[in-house]
Image (cartoon, rainbow, N blue to C red; front, top):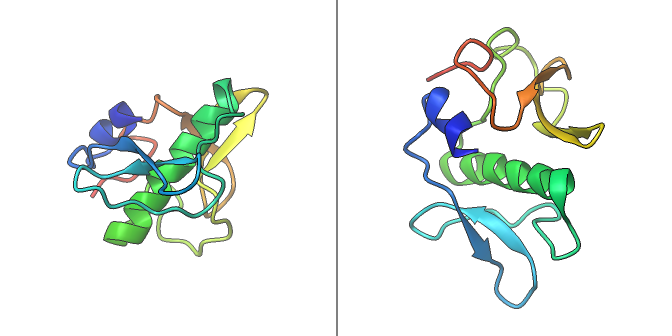
Length: 120
């Protein structure tokens, strides 16, 4: 996911995993330790694409909640009304970023480009 952050102009957000105190759940965290613990997080029972979907959702949620930046934003529909809060979907066992404005897929996690996602 760091590659996706880098190519879309958000590379300053260097994400890492953080164990939520008192629970066996991990969330994406910024280097200063701040994170958002909403949603299911990354739990020991997840693997493969389900784990990647949870991690991607946690990265997006942390950036949005801590820095008030919606990421990723579709280059085509970025200014439209938001219809979905879920920027990632698991489709046929592949984790995909999706447009939260029109609910179409953008790219598999790890394959975003500046042409697909709006840059700052």
